[in-house]
Length: 94
Image (cartoon, rainbow, N blue to C red):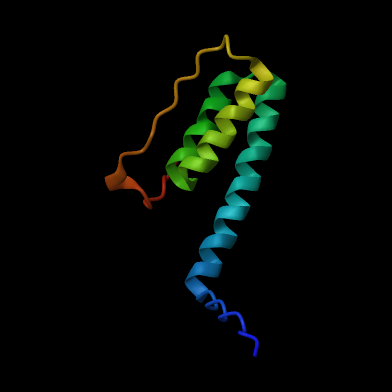
């Protein structure tokens, strides 16, 4: 007798939309960060990192911050702003 694996729950439309949004957001922020780093525009790079934390996830923000540190080096001081938990999920109009 074999036991069949339990079926995985099918993601809801909301879950699929959220995953799709976050994938597109990550791609856009990563591309923007790379362009800003290439141009040496650290203020713009910090803006992309902040958006990663505020509009994406802590993991995305950390990934962007780590990438910036790889390119610029750890000697650069990076000041990023974490969104308060009460504002997570709100969209920026900037």
